[in-house]
Structure formats: C-alpha cells, structure tokens
Length: 139
Image 1 (cartoon, rainbow, N blue to C red):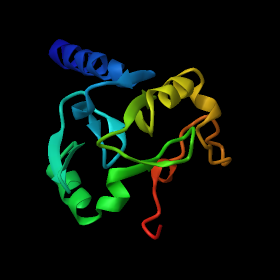
Image 2: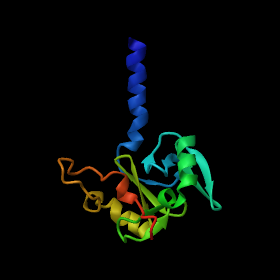
Image 3: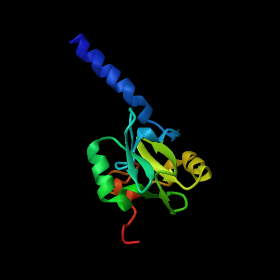
C-alpha cells in the first residue's frame, strides 16, 4: 500500500510542470495534434518537410491524414494562422497555444485568461476545447 501511495505521489509530481503557465522552448514536449503539454518527449512526425510532434503513433497517423487541421493553429492575439512547427509556443493549464511571434506569446503570457474563449455553459474560466486552435480546412 505504501508503494502504491508513493507511486501515486510521484505521478502527481511529474504532472506539476504541465499544471501552470510557461513558455515552451522544446517543442518535443507538445502533442501538436491534441495541443497539450506532455511530460515526456513525443513522437517526431514529418509532414511536408517540417517536423511536428505527437504523443503517440495514432497522433502521427491523424496528422499525416489531415495535415491542415493539425499542423496549423490561430494565434490568439493576432488571429493569424500559424504553422505549429515554426510558431512560438506557450502552455497554460496544460494546453499549448501557438503564436506568430515571441512578442505575441509574451502578451498572452501576461494575461492568458483575457484571450481564451469560454463556453458560457458552466465552464467559465476553462479553455475552449479543440476548436480553440482549430483552423478551418476550407480556407
């Protein structure tokens, strides 16, 4: 029982880096398909000559099947579509946000909650789900 509790405690400690806000300089720790910060390096995924990262082989397959959906995101500051392989990244509450510049990333970092959409259905203050960074493939 002590071993189980100790293991659980260590697991919680390992999750601490993804529970707050931080710049992400090592993009290997971002699942770019799920837009989530990971505790271990992800799987490199080559798409059109650029390297993206996923947390598992399923993410790699989805990204290769629907590259426009998973390799691009909207900068929450400028609303410009950015390529995730080139973008500045900031993680807030475990979610990865992508920016066209470090200036935009820093502006977001100063007050993330003012740029994140909420659902208005009792989940106020929480990030909008996958649609938050979704880019319409019909553009």
